Image (tube, helix red, strand yellow):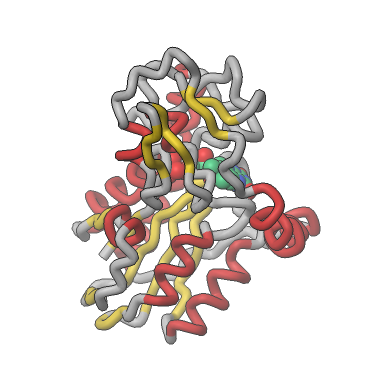
Length: 248
Ligand SMILES: Cc1cc2nc3c(=O)[nH]c(=O)nc-3n(C[C@H](O)[C@H](O)[C@H](O)COP(=O)(O)O)c2cc1C
């Protein structure tokens, strides 16, 4: 079973690609994570988790959901990690998670997809995004081939920067940076409510017709990216930037 979490669609694309290539099913974790649904899950085929890299690790919301959920059936698990540039030393922490769950780590594929983190960086324009996705298909094809054959996926050795980012930087990033106080809706906001619908944590409510972020945010960028009027901003950081949603 291929489980996926996504903010802006890249990891759904990776999950669906792998499902098609391996004859497995892709299951969206959106409702499970949003509803804190920890019903046990069963798969006779190896587990595959497709998710974005957040600060050089698996998003903590996915890690925490996995920790709370029992996985029965296959004891093997692969990870397809989509990222804007690199997974750093995510493998170390994925192995730790696997040990805690009694699962055998079969590998972590680094799938470089378009950057979506416009609270910090730039997202590519549509043409560049297409080129990046086309190039990612090669890595996806290779990873899916290993999964289908039951072979391990061997990752690159992380360099010093990757080690630092996945460890110390990740540790301080969540308490210091992952906050939602800077999100706001501009006057042009139409009130369509898509931002609240797309929030995987159900963190957006409405007050006087405007969205309000309630303090439980993982910075997935879905609210900003899906707003049809580009009326949501993250302070000044997102102003004038391309919004990215996976076109596939
Ligand atoms: C909160 C956040 C943190 C991110 N951190 C990293 C990172 O550490 N390294 C990286 O290469 N890309 C990083 N990115 C980019 C995403 O991993 C990448 O765009 C991913 O494919 C988005 O997947 P999605 O569309 O399934 O949400 C980050 C994006 C977000 C929103």
